[in-house]
Image (cartoon, rainbow, N blue to C red; front, side, top):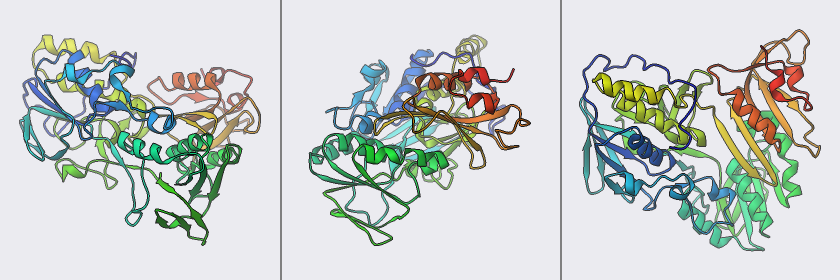
Length: 452
């Protein structure tokens, strides 16, 4: 299956509450969630030789599709990017029982298996892979705003965005910026309001301010530094009293893991995320429960705790989860066959975001910390693109005495060579160490700044 081969081995399974308990290979598995992570889970199980009964439960009534085009290509695509065509994953052919309009409503976990409940049926199984993803945040009282997270959301929004229509986007994050750009290019009158002082402040810190000028250049009004105090169908009033009239209001303030249906069946963080280890087993849970995709907060040896929402995680993580689940087999032959496959999987994919917004291509690899030091590579006002590098704390990065430092994250803007180099830098087991002064020189290959 695509994206499953990598030279980085999967770390060994840590001690678990059920460690040492004899367990037969699972003969029935339910995958809950029919998005990218769910579809990849089904594909990985079959690719790894699982020939037992496989059930897939979805909630939207649609075959699995890719979500990024919903915003990036909102006005270009009349239908979703089906994963059958994008990745060659046909869940209808791979799973024994596919129910795409049967959202799970409950999970019961026992020592020997699980039971998943929907509105009209129950599904007992030996194991489960949780892949229900996330849902857009819609604050109470914002009844006049729409969100963009599903194909149905995209259809509804697309139908209302015509030349001259007034769109107010609340939130200058990834989705907000992408929609603003494509809508403005189509003749929509677009205003973006952001509570922080700059776009993408949560994701990029001070580097987010370097994207502010893109809005005016794309014909978009950007209002920052004042949160929305009132959101109605006909507009948004900001905390400072400004009124932004609208025909459509889009709430683009983030997403939350879709785990409310689990009701305490597994440990869940306050923000709704499920913590998983390097093999996507639920931390504090039994080995026959795995969680992948947007709802999983994964423990990375390289980056620490990595939240969901990263496309590469949903693409690659399910193969690791599936292989680890099947590696519980007690027979030597079965175990060795699965273990050989596991050794080729991408066990620790770097956090990765790709965005096309307001005429620019952005890639973000890694996970920056608030205390990390920002170093720019190239001129953000120039024509050749630029790259932001974040280095772990210590002496100032430009200090000649600083020496090599751990590179925690890389943002590239219109610099595809740096994007490729950043991906390779995060292919190792540890954070790469670079000389900040060499890395800041845009005329040098980024790789040349790596410390030996």
